[in-house]
Length: 627
Image (tube, rainbow, N blue to C red; front, top):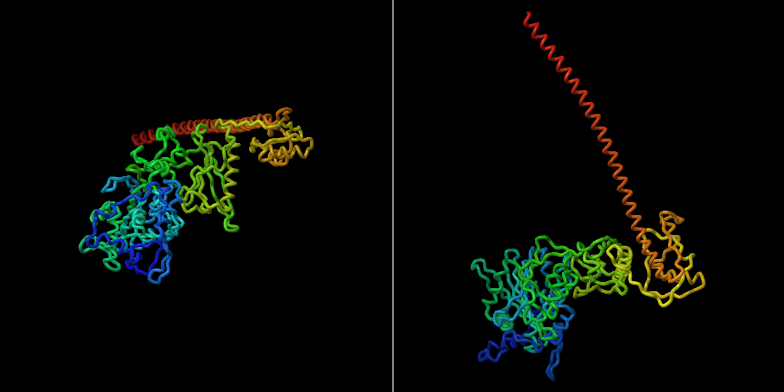
């Protein structure tokens, strides 16, 4: 692998550090260096609390200059950016999901598992986070792109990552420091690389730009060992190795290289240490409440155990969140959390009275895309106070249980949907979508979908419409209320509206439009059910007083009548089926009788033929005897 000093990337790594930084980092190995006075291994930042760690004190007289080093203009990144960039993840599990995405994307390179676990740092025993996969790994070039900003090789429509920023934001959100081990096999060339992104190191050394120490090794087939891969000179390798040993949890090169023992021929291991604390000074990630899970510290674990449904658990339990994070995964791919496999959870299978609704928006002009939404009530409804849509993008959950409708009057309670609209783009932290016009149209459609589904099915599971007494009551005349209603279109009431009395017909019609959502027009009813109200169509009768409650009672009666008619239709169909079966049974009996009669006739003929043949044989024998 070769990389010249002219190759400039956003993050300065080994070959791009510049001579001043190399000297600064190598002072500890110069003659007379006192190791006791040096910074301790893995010292903590000024503040261990994530939301307070971004304050970066600069001594008076010092300024961060966008330097022109050696006559080469390039952008520099101050260490403060590592923290500010990580604040895009408000939720620790959102950062964890980014690291899982990187492993899932490696399925196309042969990955069969990703493992998440808690380990202890070798020297101090402090908790650290370990994420390991058996994907293709990264060669020296690829690991430098991984540790840089904006470089991404993931251009396939099947990969989740695309921005080249997820690893930096996620690792820095979970801890102050991260070290990466990766082994890659390509064209009989086996390499392994180590890279360190350390906020602690950069702050303690007072750096004005981001320095990422890296070392590479190449397998020597003749010696059967790994040896240093030195693209330029030994000084670069030595200085980077020294920084790695000084600021990583591993104090010797042998201990550092031992971390590759469980990787195999290819794969990647990420160790995040100096994990952040919450505002109460406790570890943000809770490893103790459940030995097979990682939780968010500060949550009521007793209350969590009583809540069984995933919608109430995913915000606090990584195991619950990981179980719904991907819409589907290969059967052979495993997500292993603290030694136990995460069981895949399909939210759509938790629904009853499921409907599949097609939505075909126009994208890029006249191009139409088809989105199928599965919508239904939770199995736990009406006892579960959970609702919302689970919106995926490229197989990855972006918005879990996103509430398109606020259940201010109970509408939509218990209604859950699942869809995957790949035509809208997620934000960089993959916890939301860009608020484009396409997303706004989708949001409006999901609101409409929720209300329509609720009004049509809420009675089936025992939900009751919340009655809200209006400030004034209105008596609707028979000319307005005596209209035919479509059997399949339930009466929807807008309980939040207030109505005023009006003597004019136009005013009454306008109030009726506000009262009914969507409006039930006579022409609409005639088009679907006929021009007159007969046995197939029930009419709304006039309620002389308190018309809103009257309309609600009529609506309930209509729903019962519709259900009664549906059951009657089904009963008639079953009775007709029984009659057809009885007729078929009778036909089969008649056929059986005819077959039995014909069999009797054949049996008689066979008896006669047998007797005739016997007499004939007997006569022939007698004649032969006489002759």
